[in-house]
Length: 69
Image (tube, rainbow, N blue to C red; front, side, top):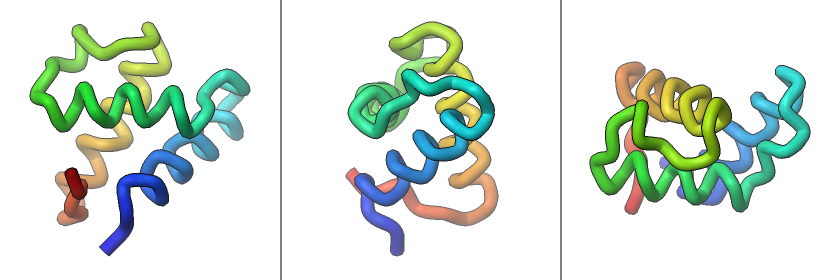
């Protein structure tokens, strides 16, 4: 099972490669915590990065991945 840190680093790397250099692992951790806390996509912190990261996390779960606390 992947750790929270590994998941946040992977999402960060994906968004940086997609052209968002500000998507640091620390920023993604903020979004991860909001996601795990039950916030809706529209309520994610960090604007568009929050929305993109939300999609990554939701897709991970839909594919059968487990998001640790």
